Amino acid sequence: MSARAATLAGTRYVFDDLATLLARATPPRSGDVLAGLAARSAQERVAAQMALADTPLAAFLDEPVIPYETDEVTRLILDTHDRAAFAPVAAMTVGELREFLLADGTDAPVLAALAPGLTPEMVAATVKLMRLSELMAVAARCRVVTRFRTTVGLPRRLAVRLQPNHPTDDPRGIAASVLDGLLLGAGDATIGINPASDSPARTAELLHLLDDIRQRLAIPTQSCVLAHVTTTLGLMNQGVPVDLVFQSIAGTEAANAAFGISLATLAEAADAAAALARGTIGDNAMYFETGQGSALSAGAHHGVDQQTLEARAYAVARRFRPLLVNTVVGFIGPEYLASGKEIIRAGLEDHCCGKLLGVPMGCDVCYTNHADADQDDMDALLTLLAAAGVNFVMGVPGADDVMLGYQSTSFHDALAVRELLGLRPAPEFEAWLEGQGILDAARRVRPPEPARLPPPLRRLLA
Image (cartoon, rainbow, N blue to C red; front, side, top):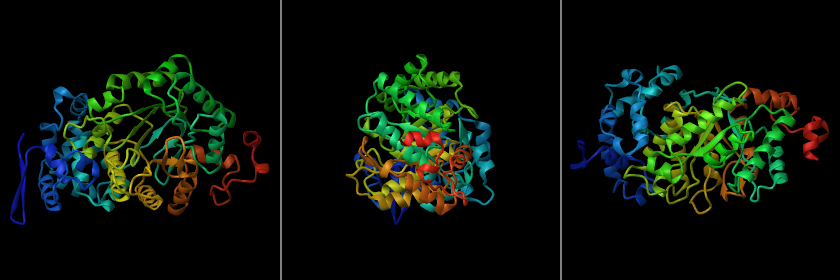
């Protein structure tokens, strides 16, 4: 591997390999400091960014940051790389790709055609050179549209995952949260429960509960219980109603092994979900969650910075054509993203990288209570992501997940940003809201008085 170098203010900085260069060029975050990978000064960071800007994109094909022989994610990235799609930018440097992405003529069709030719390392390198406004501008041009029972990712639309978690998986508590979310226009991305227990019996109970609610109310949406993929696989084989198959994923083989999965496991689950053919308007049946710092927390980062590894997780996701990919940006904790400033930057990076790679990106705009962040930071990130065309966000009762113990965004938060930016729910779900009398004459979500609700919703309220 060849060294890269740059001279700044009379000091020459040399970076031994691409992994070191990428890490030193990364804007500040606590996880890279924890791993001993961060730039040792702002001056070194600028020098690394200068050297990175001059690095040919082709170098990322010749010098994998994690060896091809030892990592199946690297093999996936290189073996599926589309050289024809890469051809228009093959002679560019990282800095030139940034300029190309920001150019007036680079629109949604151009970016969609380019996506199979970009590797995660290329897009990770490029976003390291961007300001927040540039991350937003590029991501807003990308359109990644997916379908199951609703269409997610259309222009001027913002979907919401209704997250009705309960600390004891109590069905009545979950149903109350589901109804609360539906009446506030949430649930078009999915109604998805993080179970307090990963037992197959409890997961099956929750899947039946969600499917019963969906069918009784004729809701055009999809349900998901976020159990381990192997648990869901077993339940599919037993005939339990499974819409979306969930799994947390990461950007290295070793980190995925820590999650108890491999690419072969995910392929088996994707094939099983496809065979069920439960989607009515599409067949995107996988749901993945990611987060900067997951590989480092598993001791599986191989000396690569956490933002680059996060982008590599999107290559795993892309392989299985998911309906939803969710970066749970502030959930892992302040050891990896210490403050609201770092969380905001990471959320916009993740969204931009995912969209450039052709992945249907959403974001759990969130933080843990021991991070140096608050709900004002989340309001800012939610608004920035919505303006940048994020596919979906979370809807949690009161923005406070009492089961997982972290702060996210509420049904009201999603409603407010929809109204602020003129965004609408998924079209199929919007039509259902109208049929239930939940939209007013101006097509705003306004829950009616209980007496004016259709009988099935009144019965659920009772």
